Image 1 (cartoon, rainbow over the protein chains, first blue to last red):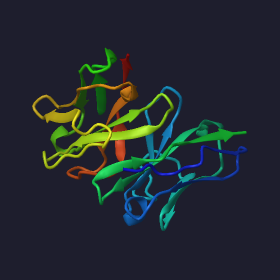
Image 2 (tube, chains in turn cyan, red):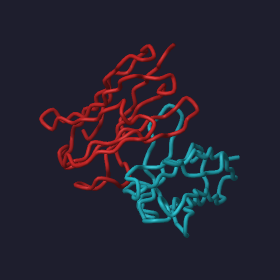
Image 3 (cartoon, rainbow over the protein chains, first blue to last red):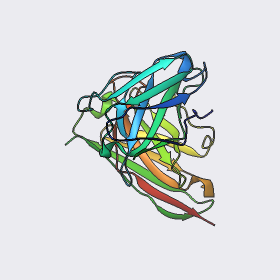
Image 4 (cartoon, rainbow over the protein chains, first blue to last red):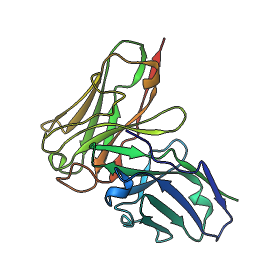
Length: 111
Length: 122
């Protein structure tokens, strides 16, 4: 059971766009479309931002978008705002072994 | 109100046991699989295991297999995490989380509890 790989940090100025990558293998992220992204502010529970690679739950701004190519998924935050500063985690179902893998998290800083 | 509420955390000595509860309200509990996810002091999220909506085959993370057991009581809208043989590395905030799609075993988690802290001491 392996973890997904994310960069530890990312940053951008207000109004800019930032992309956060998440790399797995063909056994997890690359093998299907059950890839999701979570935002977590300090002291709070994770919040679902993207599911099934690119779908947004109701209430999530369309500034947040997701994509996937091969074994790498990406979360893009466009038009950065101060409130986007948070930790972001990717997650994927690992069908071959029936478990859920998480990335190590990326701290997004809005400069 | 649609919510999950965890309870049962605390400080426990290594080797001892603890049972966490996850009480659901505001949705059809029996239609949803519920997973446990923990967050370590280093802020890593780790999947622990899950209670399938249909009580089908469960699975657990390798790190807890054989020590942790997850069960559910649909009459009480509650999922339990029984943790035996606790180790220092089990120290974490434990969250329960609902699978987005009814009657699916795996998908995204759209509803999380507030978390309950478990500290394993030596």
